[in-house]
Length: 507
Image (cartoon, rainbow, N blue to C red; front, side, top):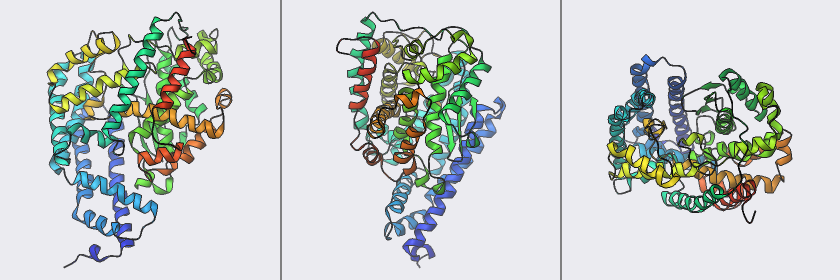
């Protein structure tokens, strides 16, 4: 006998499907708040209970998504006469449903609980510079993620399956092509800078108290237009942003010998939160009110961090505020601040402290190691050695500790294999979008110099944020910029900016 939802009209099936998607989104959003709490304010002893809580929420969302009724509603909605937005909602739910129904609930729960327990293990291992303490957990996560990929598509490259969790519409071949081009284009540029005679100003040397840095982080968020009614700033060992269009929080961290680091990380996380806050309120809980995967998300953070926050006009605008908080900066010029914000130094070991150019070599290293881990070509025990060898090969510097080497990033403790390439993919897209914005709005330098960011933000709202997941990533890029995804704009931007800054031939 046909069930009620099988015989329901297509429009009714769509409404029921959308309602189910909203329930799932709310469960996931609740999990996001618990993860924020764990990384920001939860007492260390709370981990065992928190792991169980997150596992339970994860299994509830998984069971709701993979229920027989979801599949039946999807089938009925796919046969209905829907408009473009409704078809996009069905497309996105179908993608999640097909992947989720491939994976046993028990494995989903196990991955969730393992990652929740992994966070404090990683945190302590990094603090103690003890990779061996984290290795068994990492081994378990690699094994579980291989199992996950095997269930989703046993015939595919498992790393490609994992990458698609973060970027489902730009394929791994595109990621490899972009990363290869960045390596081939940036290494000669970095070498030319190293061989040159220009020494950028060291404008931010000294001691900078954490409390005053927090005040300055609030200043920069105020200046950029952060909505405090729907956000807040806190500290975390690894800065991140999380939330919904009604509550998009940022975190940063403070090193009292590095003022620039807290400024750039705060601007970076603002870019993420600003995108989240720009998603349409009326579509909250559906794919139309959700962000378009990580390449686009990273494009927003990198656009604000690099194209705005590392520009000379920005420092002409913001340096007086920094000098008010830190009088030692009163004798620093905007040009000197700009030079310091863009210093290229290939002896840096820390990805989140890397300059705009060498940053991508950090990503290449992680990408190559992840691929070998997931394929089984690299044992977990050998990660520190391979990591250090690659740093020596690509950047000419060798970590002395695992804390500043393979333990520096939080991602593997989250089981986030396949995430790292999106940082570089997003940087490339940021340049393409910024060029498209200037093509329409004109040179934005004067706006930035005056602290006027509304026009740029409105362009991003109109061309990127408001669409949610209406378009696939390639279609959204073409809709916003007028052309397909390309690394040309980033390469041109990098060569022009750093060629002038370092007085290279031809610039």
